[in-house]
Image 1 (tube, rainbow, N blue to C red):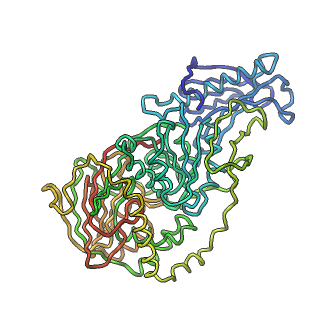
Image 2: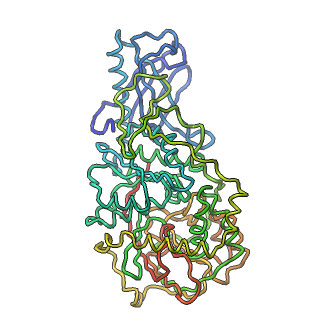
Image 3: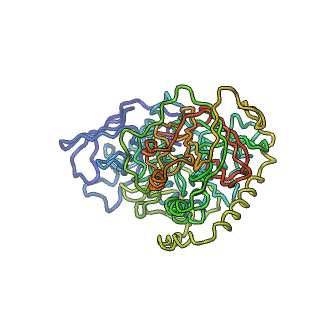
Length: 569
């Protein structure tokens, strides 16, 4: 990554002609606050928080007349907010022609390039950063959600990382729990951080691979980045909501920009213990009932992305289930009172990949694990276009099924589905247990067969749903806990008991946008720890941790406050 250890005198000033603006000179100033361009009666300011990088080029035949063959060019790259509150790419190209030969002019252009990366890197240095001298490891699950993660990397992520001069290595997972095996044995000292391009499932594997390491207490604090590429993108949406970023306009872009600036923000993790003594590290949610049923049973519709949740909710509403259980919990001290947001956001289906917005790319066949290094200089192509790194050859996926075909899936036998999913869950449960047997925890729990502490509360009832979230969103378009932040030390426990009105259930299935906290029958409590004891003699449902099924037995969970670190802007 460029500019990690260099120092540059700031502010840096110069006068240059701007590409496609004729012979007029523009004053350009670079400071720690960003870039200011003045000329032609207009002043344009690019904040450092929007600045991404800079590339250098040589004059091409098709560029503006009047440019000398000895001219060099540097292009400032940024993603500012537009009037429509979305981030859009901005490229400002300037001609360097002060010297009589190209080499000297290129040296000036490169000085600006290095200074720009220096400014981007030093922004917010009071906060911890990733180590810019090392590369990122990008883990991609090509089968996540609609199966477009590689396509997302090729068309969007690689472009932004190239513009930002971010060195990274890509590893494409080949099977379930591949990421567990990789991070369990990975030399973390070689990397600046791990970036997950997938749904939430791959990050679940990563965290539990880190938990299985002998040095797990240190390893779980390794920098993590998340870019949405699956059907459940709860963490990516929650981070964007926390940062007040316009997620729905382009989820991939706003998430990738977090990797560019690389600030490290603390994030709570949760340790869950099962009846068999296994420990599971989670970052998103724990629960059973309505939402878990919809999440697991709609897996067959993953080809349609996040829409699968809404489609399956229709079926589940027609056949509502209740589960008898006892819930024990310890209230969080000093937590805000759960309440609907003061202004209800306009929710819309997020477009994970925006077709047509990718830049032209060069395609090379490479191995499934390869490195992408930043280029020191770029001397080909139009001054306002960027060169992309070498990319994996990816065939476009098959067209998405129509809603009618998606709904046909609902006609399959539910009993067969449940048996199949439980079998898969048990197989996943057994995988890797030996690796995690020796994992220790600094979290002190009473045994699951022992009474809970005196300061815990107890509720026993028939529940339609019990669901805890560590974040504001549990998927890209489910606004679960409006008051939640990544490091608040809370699990936001939502309960629907058997007495919950059917009208409330109907409203919930139409969409959870935060207003559900005002509906009759909806209870939400901020807790620090909880124990779930499902009744073994009645309906058995899906008990899930981060959307992954675990056995229908007692579990208990507790927050590990600020033990994770997430890449943010």
